[in-house]
Length: 494
Image (cartoon, rainbow, N blue to C red; front, top):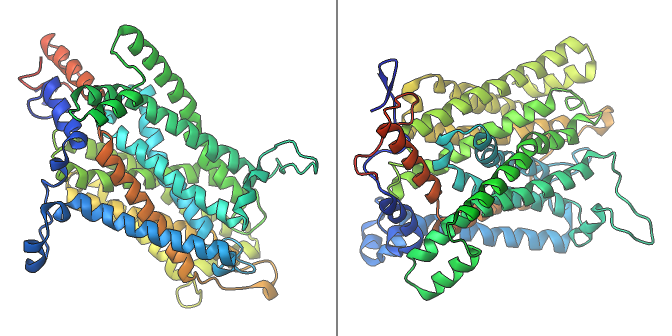
């Protein structure tokens, strides 16, 4: 094992691997249907365990089934919404934004970790991203798809959503470019486009690997078409490297700009509790916080079900937990600053909003604020412990806690701020309806549905980057360069 200052370092690939075994271990998740039935659900009633075939007892089938049910719930909720109107939501006066915008911001935030892992860590040449970037990128795309549904449907007339774009028309109806709501349209659509391009370009060499390994003629044709004629030549790799760096350079400012622009939806208003300058960095940190939590929550079961322990190591979880801890501290600082602003400003409306959030016995929404503090500040504080950061059970539940906490954060920011307007006569109360909850559950189902389709038909981990990492580690070993933490090499690698 390589050392620095006499201390051993953990490798980024554990075990004995060659290029061929890496192809088989990752590629066969796509090419061999049996890989999805190897892991079996343990807690099944005895009468079901005997009668169900192995395919139906697999975790993949369970999660895909849950996702499929969620998609159907989503379709029913959207149908009711479009046929009836957005009055079926709990939105009212003064709470014009409810669960729809809460979920929009929440899903956009979840999508940030994938771009950060793919783009920023690529530019910084951080090799630990190689094991997690592929499914993190997929998570980004599916999360943005879930997010995009909400503002589209919130307009009430999604069939004329193209009015948001500055197309030439005889009525001269142009968008108001000084509105951050219009900036959102361009920021999110650009983010989605660049994310899909980056994801697809990264898949091209792996499509060629699957094309060459596939036995089915249909699979060979499908992956061959997607591989765009990739032949592994120096020219192909040269163009691939340039395209990746260019897309990473485009994606990097998007990581910072997209959620900053989302925060402008609030920060550029005059609503008490919203018009503060801390929102852009606060929202970006919260997005990375929630995004890494979702990456960990997905990586832990996938690692176990598909025997990917050698590629997604405890070192990866430790570093992701450290990123969560750092961004969680920024988020906690934001909470403190919100309280400080309300107190220091001396503005009665700001202080009234603070009272409405934190007074347990008097404020109707105080429960959401204190749950937010519990899930986002108190529970994640356990990540200061190295043992907790390497305990997968604890890490999974902390990640789930953060995902719930970030949803409560948006709940506190949006409807809780709107319920107390400038006029006491305008005060109201917000209660989501069954259609609100149905759409939220439906988008979670849609996200799971798309993620497990991705796991079934596309490589979950970047095959060629794992080979590149293996080669790099072998080179370090052969030349005796024992500096750096990623240098342990399998004995068989060649």
